[in-house]
Length: 217
Ligand code: MD3
Ligand code: FE
Image (cartoon, rainbow, N blue to C red; front, side):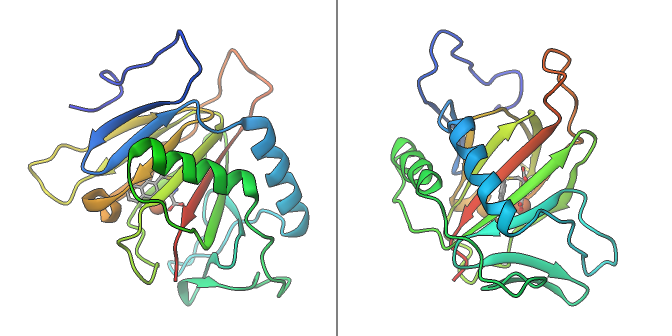
């Protein structure tokens, strides 16, 4: 069973390390460089500031969000969709940085799945205690394309709830620099993020970022 307790952590090396957790879920440790990713996020959010988006349920998202790439994921009282422009500034989203595309491509290579060109990158920002409720990602035109997720900063416990009751839910610890690929059957499974906890060893670290690279159209 793949969960927090059985994941292997190779503490001896900082080389990328791929684990197939089953069902098309690949966990790759030590792939993303935090410093260069955070610089790119800074540039993007200077153009399009992170914000909480209103959901159709009438309350704002807990994490704050921005986007880069041709399309961005947006939410308001009318629902969820991908848009070529930021609904507030009416500006097109900043370009997807080369660094993100490189991580995406390396991740696909390491997991041995065909790479694809993402046209959307959602940036989620979590402060301590913020979470993301259980949901499915199905706003993309063709939901068979994998999703590649990059975690930066504070760790998160991510939960996946398989559609098949014979497969147990999984908890996955996502740490700084980790990449997760959701492909094949897991792509449409429900998932959520537990409330982010402070790291007592790094008291100045108060944020987690998650980038999801997707093909929306
Ligand atoms: C598992 N974000 O933006 S990323 C989201 O950490 C989202 O911010 C989380 O869920 C975060 O929609 C999790 C990893 C992820 C993305 C898509 C999935 C896991 C998934 C789709 C199916 C199953
Ligand atoms: Fe999701």
